[in-house]
Amino acid sequence: MRLAITKSLRPGARLGKSIYNDRGHILLCEGLRLTQKMINRLVSLNIPYVYIQDSRTDDIIPKPPVSGKLRREAINMIETTFLDMKNKMNLDHSR
Image 1 (tube, rainbow, N blue to C red):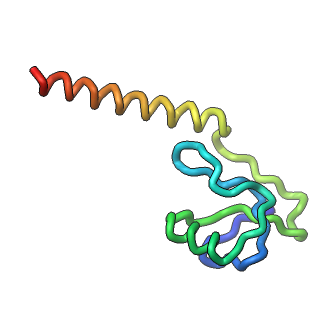
Image 2: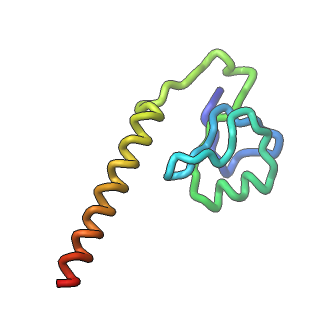
């Protein structure tokens, strides 16, 4: 598996890791063969790079700096904090 710049991807490349949106939902699944339409969409979403499968680098398995679970927990906490702040501001303004 190797990291590839999204703009340099070619149709037929196979994803090495799933791609998630900012809410933790899967956009594209690991192992999926990319089409030009998918590549264009990734570029339009400003996703700068993706992991792709490559027979020359099959033995390399990158380890993320933050686990998926910790990432989702952090996103949920941030969302909750912002919603709490928004609700507090709405209460303050309604007085």
